[in-house]
Figure 1 (cartoon, rainbow, N blue to C red):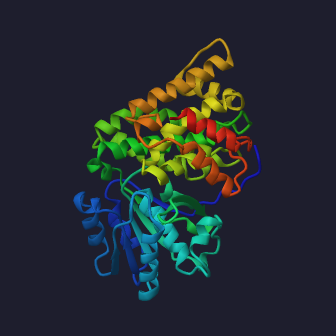
Figure 2: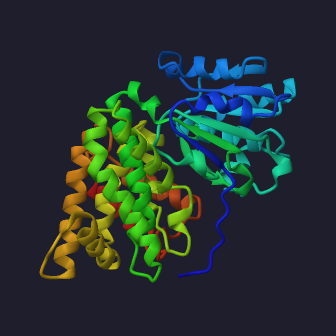
Figure 3: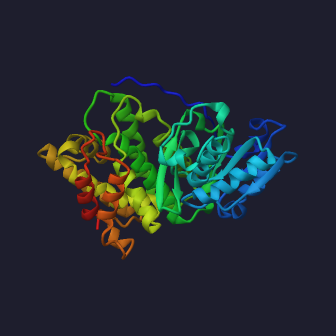
Length: 388
């Protein structure tokens, strides 16, 4: 196990009716920017619950944060905070709204060009240089409610870029599983697959001696396989909803990543598909992941075999046999979750995609990706073309 530091200051407030605790979590004299997305919180009652809980607070509302939050939109919120001297932000929404609020938090006091936060992948570490924020989670998926990372899209250049830093943990996150009852099936499917792939990015690398991290990761994967199709059909089942929400948080709150190698190439390639074609984030992961495992089979086969044995109960005559079956079972699960695992099933404008992505990575100076830094531009090309 490699050396690591584990820091997670987020107060995670979980369960039914917990939105009512907001007055205990936000300082009484706070002037709040209430940030949300396209309006689903008005339909499912979350907005009313939040406003009732925060009666008496001075609140400025900012809506319209997109499913892939746009830099251009977020900068409008930055200006509002500066002009009105707002001291706290409350993100009410899913991972996109929370990610957007993380950027807003970092950009308000940033000295320089705010795009540099994204282009230079800056680590924001000083608490005095950010606006504090909390979250009310409405869509389990990204784990953004309990981590310090975010992904933002720049419309002008069609880029989807990640950033983060220890100053960007939410002060608190209110997570009530009952909010998923009104979500469309597609969003729940996306949330399951997003969380599942988050675990795979930190798990499907190569064998190591961090035994507990592996077992925790496998437990999350097994839970998502067990409940995934059922929670899509029965989101009002509290047992299913609560385990879904907690699994999504645990998938990316930092715990299973400590002391182990991690990959993230599926995400880096997938982000480009979203930026180019507006394909849902989770669905880009379903497109790229299986092809990546096949192209990088030789360096991942041992862990793929372990994954197949422990998560799916696969048996086989060799490591290679079990590893191949594990990829097949993964694709079966993705299909069961409503994913279409080929790019051509998601867009008819895919010609030249591999060349475009490789060129973009080379322009950014990304010479190699993956846990062994062996996913070269040519490997990226092969992965994307296999995904067509």
